[in-house]
Image (cartoon, rainbow, N blue to C red; front, side, top):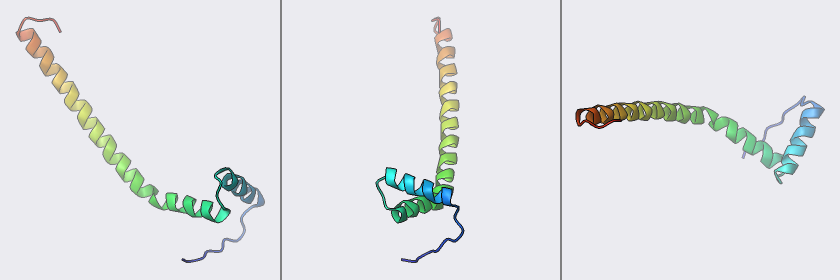
Length: 81
């Protein structure tokens, strides 16, 4: 695996990373790798979320159409909706 050196990290940021990695029961290195991996996949997660939202809107539209159709059928049959 490749190694990366990051220079100039503020001390308060390092302290936060130290605390967060400790809370996660991970080494700082493993914590930072997990953080970078999550960041690297975030564009794909955004695309999946967008596709999900589009699908959800389609389902809502179809459910509303089905409800309207059922209400119209009930009126035709003389039943109150």
